[in-house]
Length: 244
Length: 244
DNA sequence: CAGCGAACATGATCGAGGTTAATGCGCTTG
DNA sequence: CAAGCGCATTAACCTCGATCATGTTCGCTG
Image (cartoon, rainbow over all chains, first blue to last red; front, side, top):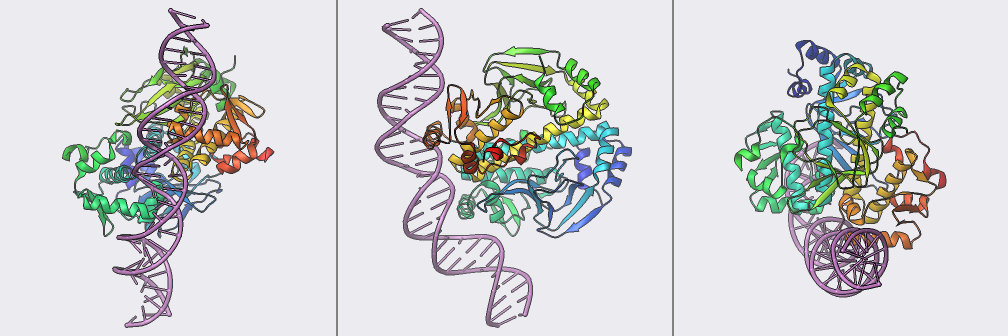
């Protein structure tokens, strides 16, 4: 079975067989987790670095009033957090959203890799930069896009990310997120999100059914979202451009 | 004259005199820039890495409809962008907001530092992690805080960041941002931001006057914002906690 | 010191999205 | 199969912040 994490890094940095071997053994400790398992809690002292091999997770903060804001979705191949002994205390939570396979890389091993393997450091750095880029694009969405555009944009992003790791099938991909989870990510109420999803379905643009996202009209979806995949800094071909 | 950038890194990673020397010479190329000078434009191929030594800058994206979303403010000591030859193309713009002093570190030199100096790599990494943390907190603000809270939170953040680099004086600090700029950062209209600022002043909480932010009642401001400075991961004492 | 443009200020109105509440529907579990 | 729970769905109403319109103030320059 291939390792989604290593595959993803290889796609963007020239790793030698040697280095792939090092990473593989660093990922030795793999756990199966149920949905709803917390990998990281606010206030934790960071220790091992977690990597998603399979399944979905999210990063979130709670507010005093009980509200929740999701700040990122982690898909197979993504780091949960590359804190590497630098921060003293986690400032947010990370929880699985589906049954997942997660590798944990001990801090010491991470540091050793970084200090001895420039190619691996570069791969990690690339991953950090892409994560930042996604965070920035979320800020743009929340600040300046209205609800339909926001929903459409997130769906484009998630579809492309799934596509880039080989987890799309034609015009659809897995979408295990409940409307509650999506609304916590989009800064909308579940009620309003539901309305938006209904409208998008009725307009023949996209729909979420049976745990799958179905792009009925990808080009139109991208147009509504104002989607430009440059911020994902991937080298994969662009689905929306092809079909638009 | 001390170098704000190096001071900041030293506060968070154990740099030897040797390493400080290397960084100092890497910052050799320093330019004075006027307000409104673009350091980075969307579509640019990234080359040197810019560092703010003095003055304010911001990172932003434009939307098709002409709207602008600011995604970060850079203060003295901050990296503008640690892209390091990893990304092929910038996905956003960076522009100075005031007269500034900016150092540019050639890519080759950045890479050399990272490949030979683990302490410097760690300092850079820390800086990246803090930047990410700030991005996440902005997402929380935009998604779940209403306008007054949002304004209050940004003011807390900027005050603390200025405080942490020694640029606050008692209950005030420099605040060269126009209401238009602030509203582009907060995802509000200038009109509404103006009302919020009026309310905060009338409530005796804070005011912006003559290019300065004045905290009339820091504890109250922090309470309105729901501000917790843990996300800034600084070791400085906390102004709001002291006075609250 | 007149004239001008940028930034600040404020009133009136509108609408996207929040709030509340009720209903349905599919799953699990006893 | 009944009970119960989490999630999806829809309707009625309300509010926060956007929009539109119109000054005003400040700082600069001729």
